[in-house]
Image 1 (cartoon, rainbow, N blue to C red):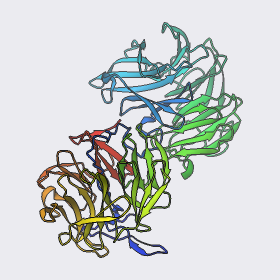
Image 2 (cartoon, helix red, strand yellow):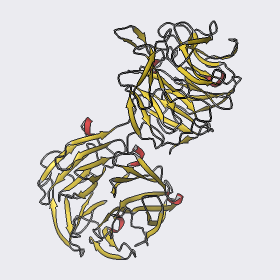
Image 3 (cartoon, helix red, strand yellow):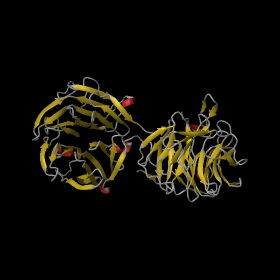
Image 4 (cartoon, rainbow, N blue to C red):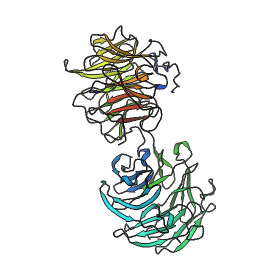
Length: 612
């Protein structure tokens, strides 16, 4: 529903017709609509300390390079780029993040493997490099609370190379098995001493029995037998507990009577022996298959991940068993399947659809309006409540009592909600309201709503019951888009050129308490602004403005001088696609919602993006 902004920056229209009226909802091109900044400076407002960016799927997308089930119905994942280990609940809520040694961080190092034993000890394979050459490879241990338990194994080079430990598994006694790809073996180590106990594989590359060809994935049964699949061959090999080759199952004829014709040369991403005695393989090339077969090689089910509802294409697909389900993850999706039938049980997609308005409560919860209503995120970044379904709220804010207000463009009313998402009433404002700002007036000892009246070109001041107690801006603005109140009793307003459909952005205007204009910033002037939507005022009086068409955040001083600009167009951390709303917390961190990237990013006071 988003249309490209024209070069003239005309504010295009999206008109929705309801039984009550026809309303111009999107004066802001593809931008939907902004919200003003939730910048209440009162000491009661907490600094948000949640996990950012908000709006990403549960089991946040950057955390899925590795995955392992853990005791207590938990999961452990690792992020190559964050260089952290994450502990999750089964719902994908982050419980703990564990920073890894800096010397092994990409690109000078690498996480190579991850596993969790039955007691909850986390084993992570790490490599350190110098000039692109590995100088150390080791296995580090942590408990689920993130406390280091020391180094389990420091590898020694063989033939001038380190082993590249790419897979970790544990037997019933928690002895450790490692796939050493450059040594072409699986090796078993004593859990207490790290001493080698057995080796599986000939130690040579090839397709003969006992040899491994390419990267290996392996799994164990309860008797200590080891099952190995390698990248470039067409078999599953079985090794006895003493390390000797026993037998193999080949495909496609025994396993895959349907496409893909073969698993050979197809980048097998993961392998496990399920608790029901059947095998599960994931393939992560163009289609992303999940394949289950019994010990004889008979196919039980095959799930084509290229289907939209179950998609897990491209990057490595990892999975972990939990009860009767299997969690399947890659860099962009999380899907949960029934391990017996292969049926899709549920999926974890991004929690936001075109992030719009922002607000926060005194407990540090963050509220975000999107195309599906309002979502609440707790202090860990987990979405724990959804409400206001069927509304279109381009802006939200919270009063001192914790009541959430939203400007619903479908009905023209300002909706009110209790913290638990239940209705707290509604206000019928004068004129078309795009955005509002709520501040606590110390003189009145009450919350005051600053309401944009785009129809009549004025900012109205309302009580929380909807009673008008004053106006500001009459004769100075034409059709206000958004507003932020300042500590001196004035307002900052983003104004449009006229009240008609498609009216272009006119200016960012500071209006004094006596209704005089303090300053005006036109498009292309200071900060090269184009279309300002969300506005927030920091505690030092500086103004942060979300330039939706310019894909940037611009900071101005209290007297309107350009100070700095943050970000550029894009989807990477610190970049923006249609920034809509902005808010500032008591610590001068600021938060930006993006309709284009469906997320909320956090920045420190210097504008450095914060990934927590």
